[in-house]
Amino acid sequence: MLKKRGLKWAVLPVAASLMLLLSGCSQQEFSRGFLPGVPGVTNHTDRITGLWTTSWIVLWGIGLIAWGLMFYAVIVYRRRKGETGLPPQLRYNNPIETMFTVVPLIITIGFFAFTARDMAAIEEPNANPDVTIQVIAKQWSWDFNYVDGNVYDSGIQSQFDGELGSEAALPTLYLPVNKSVKVDLSARDVIHSFWVIDFLYKKDMFPGRTNYMYFTPQVEGTYKGKCAELCGEFHSMMLFNVKVVSQAEYDAHLAALAAAGNVGQLDNKYDRNQNLPGDNPEIRG
Image (cartoon, rainbow, N blue to C red; front, side):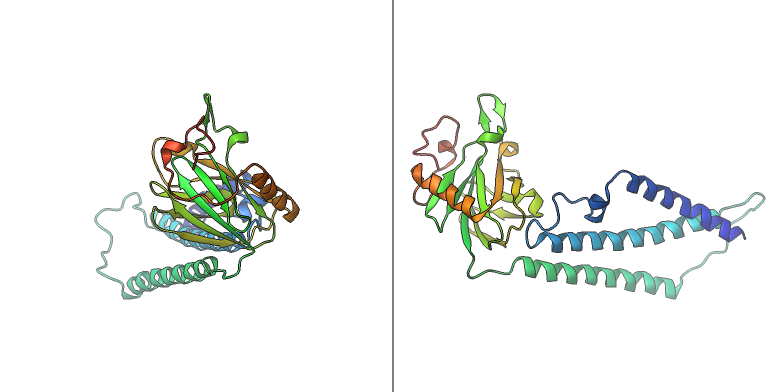
């Protein structure tokens, strides 16, 4: 009877915590593990969300068992009034020690296996993408080469007459919906990181080296992007947008870039000194 009462009191803190957690979020937020965005933004986001939420379910299960056993032991085996001396001392318990070794090993191997499986799927190269984009990071903005259309768009530092992060002036990368995309990632000066928040994936960009991302955007909309690697004084202003649009709107954007004279491909020869507000757009890089 006493042990049952102790178990009840051990469960109460856990139940209260879960009630508080569930009452402060929507069903969709909770089911996605509080990750940003909406389901299916790219062909990889549901896979990433599944790995994330499954991992948390397993970890919460382990935590609840551990907390329950801890509170159970604290309550049931506490010193009671009138008791003196030390309780019986145990030197070891082979079954428990074996369990404490084997169970964490199984959990670690399981996490590694599922992570390796999903990473292999996300990183699998696409030899024939529908669209190839080259993204060049620089202190503190972005250049976008639309390789297939032989046009480019060059961004400048997000600082305009005292107005920080002006939304209209941010560089914007256009992508056609439901088309496979290959993104070549490089940097001109220091290490940067390409992160479209709702895509749930980011990758570092190194001077003198090219990294790659492969994905298919599946939901039209405008998504926030930023540099995720501390890259200097104005790192926090290194922002951009991604617009996932119809094929017709994507083609119209490339045509507008060509009409504006942005024909050809930018390279790494320009540095941060050609990347400030008010610079001649003809020499920006």
